[in-house]
Image (tube, one colour):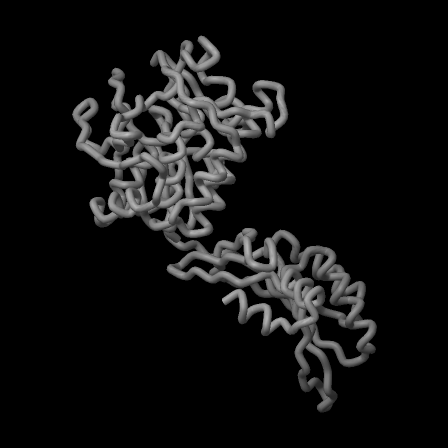
Length: 388
């Protein structure tokens, strides 16, 4: 499994996170050219080498109408944009549909945080700093590069947010700024002696949306390391470190329970199978077998976690006619599974995603396809053919 780990010991800003991913790209110049071809209005991307506390890395330079914006956007004023304005910009970009959907989801989380902080509805929200073109560029560029690198799992350290106060469009606010604090709810954070805003709202939104888990660095084999540098200087290296590598694939342990049956009705066996599934068995199935005295019978097999094997054995003994249940422990290799929703000509459809071991599979949810086929009076094959 490919894992991406962010070290946020000096916080996280959108440009720093993006720069760390840019360093992981095999061809940095080609990746930069792709970013400049996304079509973000009046925005150009460049990068430059930067050294902080003796550590060399990359600083992302985002220019709007030819001028570079400050990498801590709280410190000066920007034009205000509504969520609708941001959606119109993002909808026009030359990005894969997954990237577009993710960018809009990140901004939706920002809108919810701003709504909470200011006590107004999401429709009334006017983005200040995070609605600037360079912030839109950071979110889009990060999402695009992450899509290209395609890690199976993303982890991050607890986030250093800084301390003191920060100046924003509304005046002086405590660190972390209120919207940042709202976005980082349920994320492990800490302050410290460094004065200033180390984690921006854009950085917080990206971490909260994309990171699967926060904590100590997991055990894995790094293959590449990237340093995304901030513009300001601090006593510690002002950077986000990204590490991309592979974890050792550790198989799951499962228990297999089985028994032979030759004196039960199909209805009674069906009831037993249903009861076992409802109790939490991972799999329940039957196999025709030849038993003693050449009698045809049924082999009932139950797969479950080791912790549930005693419960499953008791249910098998209670709901079948067997007088004994066999057990063996198994090891299995499984893909990571998730469900996402994609926009299609038929409307939103869920997709099952399985990944790991160098494998990526996607499959439309059958129930959604069946519903659409019934509504339109056509076959599943016709729906799939149009989707593909």
